[in-house]
Amino acid sequence: MPHILEDSTSSLELSAFKEKLRLLYNQILEKVYKRENPGASPEEVQAYVEENGLQFPDEVEDAQEQDEEIEELMNMLDTLVCAIDYSVIIYVGVPEEEDSITR
Image (cartoon, rainbow, N blue to C red):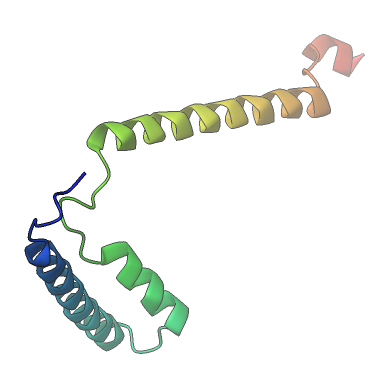
């Protein structure tokens, strides 16, 4: 528990500075994207800014968490692909031998 006399103004000032810096950076990203892609919709611009926005080190996800999430997604994709392959085999059927087709 923080001490009642502890000075917390520096963390408040740092947070305000980060937000101002983030705002300015996002404005620059938006202007650059609009200049490079004049026909872009507002949704495309917003998506670009969100994807490429400024993140400070204390806000970035842990690398191990990212690795675990990627591994989980890859496993889900493998399961989905196997299920699709299996359903195609059942639907289409296994090809018969050529001799039985020509008879």
